[in-house]
Image 1 (cartoon, rainbow, N blue to C red):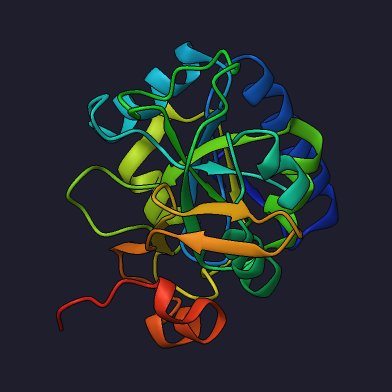
Image 2: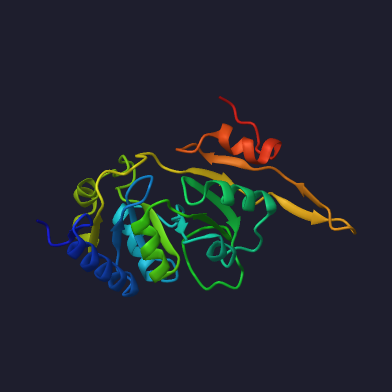
Length: 232
C-alpha cells in the first residue's frame, strides 16, 4: 500500500489520514481529498505559497485560480463582499452539493488565489470527509485532482497517478459519488436593493460559467428568470 494513501473505510487509516492531512495543510503542503463530485487537490486558501504549489502540481498558471471549499453558508459569507438573496436561496437548496458560485471577494482578506479579478468561487461539498476536514482547517483552495487538460480523477488512485509526490497526503474514500464536476454560476452581477418599506428588489442576471452535475432546470426552479438563458 502506498504510504501516502489512506483508506478512509478503515477507521485507523481514516483517523491517521485526517490528522496528517490537517497537519500538511497547516504547513502549506497539499492533500488530495474526496468530494461528492470528483477528487480534489487541496491547499490552505490563505497561503500564497500553498496555492502556488497547487497550481504548479496541476501544471496550471495564475490565470486559472482555484475555487474555495467552505463548510457552510456562514463561512461563505465571511469571504464575500455581498451574498445576495438569490445566492442564499440557491445555497439553502443545493448546498452541500454540486453548485459553485462566484462572488466579489471580501476586500479585507489577505490572500492570493491567483488572477481572480477580486472574485472567489465558493462551494460546500456534499461529502462527510471533506466537510469534517473543512471544519478543522477552515476554507481550502481546492481544484480537481488532475493535470491540466486531463480528465478529472474520480478515484484516489487516478489522482495519485496524476500528481504523485507533489501531494503529501491522499484520502481514499472510494469512487466519487457523482463523477462529474460542479455547475459554476457567476453571481457577481446580481444586486439586491430595498425600498423604504423594506421590500426586496433584485437586478442583474446569473450566468452559467460551466455546466456540471447540477442542471440548469433545477437552478431555474429556484431563481427563475434571474438565470440568463444559455444557447443549447
